[in-house]
Amino acid sequence: MKITIVSSSTRNGRISHRIALAIEKQVKKLGHQSEIIDLLKLELPTFTERFALVDNKPENWQETMDKLINSDGIIFLTPEYNGSYSSGLKNFIDIFAKQGFRDKPIGVATGSTGSLGGVRAAYQLQQVILSLFAYPQPHMLTVGEMQKKFDETGELIDDGFKERFEGFVDKFLEFTKKIADL
Image 1 (cartoon, rainbow, N blue to C red):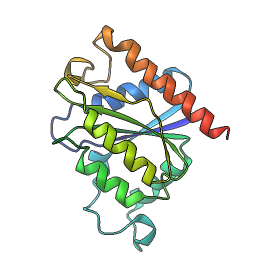
Image 2 (image 1 turned 60 degrees about the vertical axis):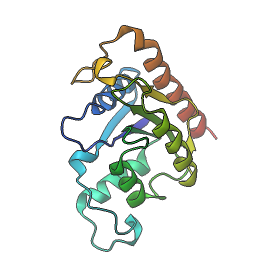
Image 3 (image 1 turned 45 degrees about the horizontal axis):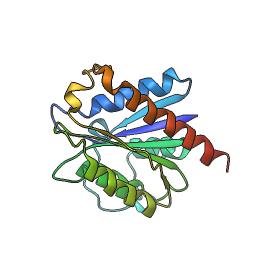
Image 4 (image 1 turned 90 degrees about the horizontal axis):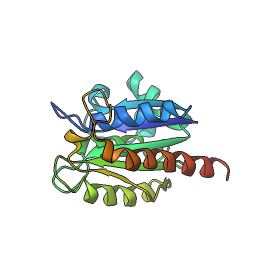
């Protein structure tokens, strides 16, 4: 299977991107293809219109849409900012909706430097995924004190978090396979 991870923090010194790197490594370790769409590198302008209605699209927009369409499953990874998901992810979703997400299984992973791990952002994203005519995976990954769970390269540094992290990836892959088999 081909899994695309959307890493949505565009902030200097971001920590949540470590989670995206870790998920990518784990998916590959399990024998699947995985790729990160890094919104920091994508440099999307502020939303003015959906992908389908923009006449002169930047080249990287078509490449991004192709990645989404060709994915078997997508994982939205976001830090929690002010009790919600990142504005970068909102902008990304608005630009590439609904074509890029329709009928896709989408997992939610969130992180925060506090103890709650972005749970409020995670629940909000579950609702957004439904409005994209996609399938939200019920099992979410919320990573509290994310700076203590993964290093800068995406290596897990908290052995006590291993089972939960690997369980999320396993469940997402199972969920994606079930949707593909429908």
